[in-house]
Amino acid sequence: MDALGAQQQQTATDGGPIHQQQQQTPEQQQQQQMNQQPTSPPPQRSNFKAKEPPVFHRDRKLLKGWVADMREYIQLSDIQVSKQLGFMRQYFFQFLKQWYDKTQRSTSLFVNVEDLFTRLSERSPDPNKQTDLRGEVWNVRCQGNEGVHKYSVRFNDIAEGIVDMSEIDLMYNYIRGLPDEVRKKVRRRKPDSLNTAMKDAEEAEQLLSGGRKKDYGGQGRDRRSDSHPLLRLQSQSNDGPVPMDLNRISRIYSLSQDEIKRHIQENRCFNYHAVGHSAHQCRNRKQQ
Image (cartoon, rainbow, N blue to C red; front, side, top):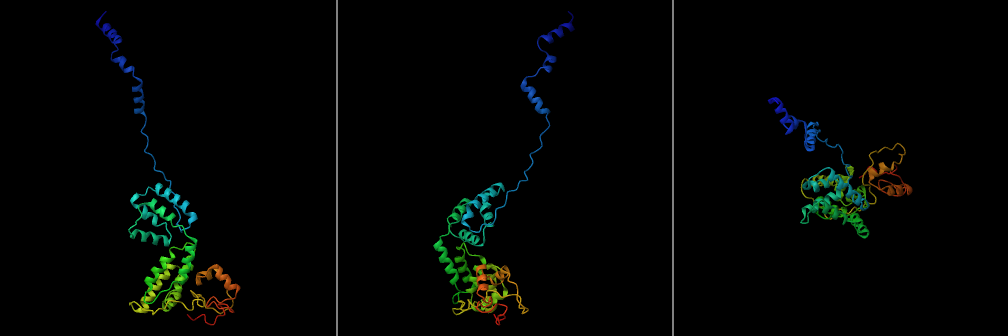
């Protein structure tokens, strides 16, 4: 056997280079297949957007569902823990925002959103207390030289605990308790919210006092509250009867729907609430 034949025989016998290239272990084959596969694209970011919860208006019956929606929204929106409390505040109604701010200025701050949820549930309204608060907000008045600002703060302290009174009714009671001169100016401005009425009252006080704190000498009880409108009609036309638009009347006079219907049934004047003539026939409607 020549040298070439001996070399080929030796290669075939001991598994030389030619044989090693043709035979692979299962692990090597699997690794080779993985290396040959194309690289997968990066995962696409989901376009899913969590449903934004509504503003919470202190309705105890809706609290449980609102809390669940808010928890889910915070989780899906990936809001940092340090920002969650401040984020929650924007979903509170006006008086809950005031309650939140007052708590955060006190020594018993909210620890986290769960602590906030717990304290919200503890604010369940007591029916007897609600009756007392409605009586207080009806009778509250700006006293002596208290000033409009302190009166507004005191009014808010009472109003923020009431859960079943509309903002229009609150605004009506607030304006009733203002000093006579301030009250007249606020009525002329026809505010459409409690906040606006409070701002108008402070501005009116500044104008009346020339920038100085005004002493009203115990005024503030509206002795004519039952015979004066909260706000006057914008139209002073005498050209015949005007159709009764209850929503419009409610906005102008800040009366509840039931009060408006009672005025119509009893033929009461919407300007001075007197029986026997309508607002259209009122001789004193241009007077404030």
